Structure formats: C-alpha cells, structure tokens
Length: 342
Image 1: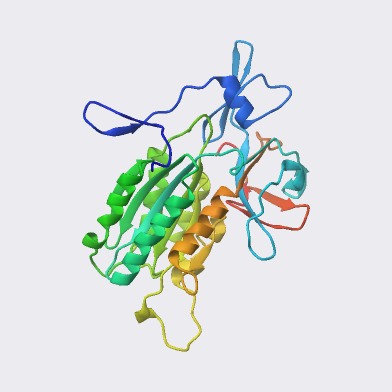
Image 2: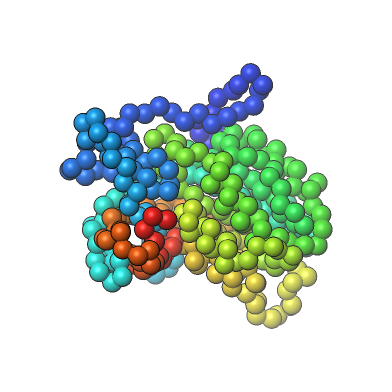
C-alpha cells in the first residue's frame, strides 16, 4: 500500500508531488504556538518563518531548529516527552525553547533516502537480505506520510527511484539492485553527499502543512573506496540541511576473521553518524530487517526543538548549542553548533 497520498497523475503518466493547500492559521496550530503570533508559516527548512500581524508580514530567519533523539540507558527511544522535559543552552547560557514537536503523535511527515551498496564486495546473500530489510522498513512506516528515494552506489552513484510515496515504485527499484551490481569501488561518502543534495533539491518542502523529518540511511559493508567527497564535507552539508545519517553495516564474510573481535569499519569511525545525530548499526545477531525497524522507531520517536538566538547581529561565530534531558536521558542532536543567518 502507498506510504501516503500526496501525489497526483499528469497527462504524461508521471507522478508528481502535490503540496496540499493549507491556511496559515492551520499551519500555525500544527507547528508553533506563541501568544504574540497570529499565524506562522514554515516556508523551508532553512528556517524562514513568516509571522503575520494583520496584513503585515515579517520574515524571521533567526529561528534555530535542531532534531534530537532521546534514548534511555538501554538505548531505546523515549516517546511522549514535551518541551518542559528539556533544557537548551547556547554557549552555556540557558535559552527558552520556542518550538517543540515530536514526530510520533503529531504524525510529522518523513523524507528519507535509502543509499544502498551494490558494489562487488556485497555478496548475493547480502543483496537479498537488503531487499527484505527495506520491505520491512516500508511496513514499519506505513502509518506515516512518508516520501522515500532510493539511491544505489558502487563505482558510481545512481538514482534508482526519486521521492515517492508509492510502495510499488519502491519495490520495483529494489528489484533492479541485483542486476546493477558492478565494480570493486564503494563510493559511500559520494553517495551520502548525493543523497543530502537530493533531499535539499527534490524532496517536498512541506507535507500536509508540516516540515518533514529528514534522514539518509546507508546500507553497506562499511569500507568506502574511491570517493571524491570527504567525511568532513558530508558532515558539513548534512548539518546545514538538517539531515540525520544512519548506517547499517553488512559485514561480508571476506572481511571477517573467524574468532576475532570485529574491528569498526572506516565508515563507522568517520563520524558522519555521530556528528549528525544518527547511529551506526552492525548486522550480526540481529537481521538487517530488524535494524531498519529500530531505525524507523528512532526516526519516528525523535523531536524537533527550536529557539531564538540572542544577538543575531553579532559576528557570525558558531554558537555551541546543548540540549539536555532533565530526567537524565541521553540526547543526540543532529548538530552541535549554530551560526546565525546560515
């Protein structure tokens, strides 16, 4: 079944996004409630907010938005929290939380890119398990208004499916994966960078009046080879676009030594997940399908938190932003700094 319904057919039989019409007051009720605001419209995830006073429109670009994941001591996502459960600090000075929205409960929409390794280092069995895992992931997100794109990578990065909420299109893109395996190079960083830019340029800016949660999920053997993009560039671009990166490592038997302790892969130690609020998973005792379900739980259990920085006209030095749980839960932020105007 489709993940949602915000698409429509055109005369050339292509399916395009249809962004629903919604009043500014409706968007305000869904997104930000402040006593001095008559209505609010979130235009882009570049954080431009139009605040309307009668007929006068003021564009406020100062709102700084962060995506956070909250987990307990066992690493399980913690749902059902509110703004009062957190403290936000800018350069160690506490600031008021101006906006708070959970994904779960609010049914905040999702924009996700699946970046799938089809290089020669991936075994036939891993390709099969990968397809099964993605189908389980789609099942987990069936209740959410979700747009998903599929990217494959080996010696080159290829768009297998542009953003869609049609299940059958996504399944067809997965069927092509085994036929497209080629090369010994694994351009993982190039694929992540491409996926982030794809989200910026092609994903819906708003779905049903709400700004989507953005994520890239990389499924690979964890050994990037031949990239032209560095991990630092990937982290910078992801932070600027508010994209969280998750990895699932499918270690090929050729990479493992019997009885030895597993050594973290280069992708795991690159920092691209930790620096964007994501997490790396390794398919071992738990299947790739189970790990993708865990990631779906994390994404849908996350929160958007925003504040208005002080002295935005000051020199554009990065502000260190720390969000903490008053109950002692672990908080992962999609970024740790904010520069006004960027």
